[in-house]
Length: 158
Image (cartoon, rainbow, N blue to C red; front, side, top):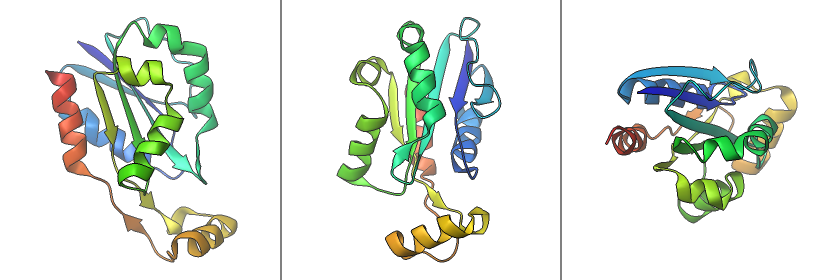
């Protein structure tokens, strides 16, 4: 089975999560960052996994655009959806529902909330000020949920 993991990442957290996921999946797995290739072809893949981060309260625009252009094709694939965010519980679920259309969420074989990171060391001045004010964070913080990534992979491998 050929799997394509498509993601968009500003500071590298979603890419890191995608790399961790890739190691857990069976078969041939390819990664594509939408920052480098905005509309990758899906026809060569049996499975497609789509991942995004929440950045300043919103999903990445490249992910929104990709979904809009490819929703019909995604509905024909063995699909997985994940989100990297710092919220947990109901607030994280809410962000997931806002990110991915209901039709895709219901079709998906695995939905995952992989945690997130504040990589203050990679942020510009304005981003650092916002994170400090909103979250009280002044240094790098990682809350990537490796166990959730493993559970997600198990569902897709089944």
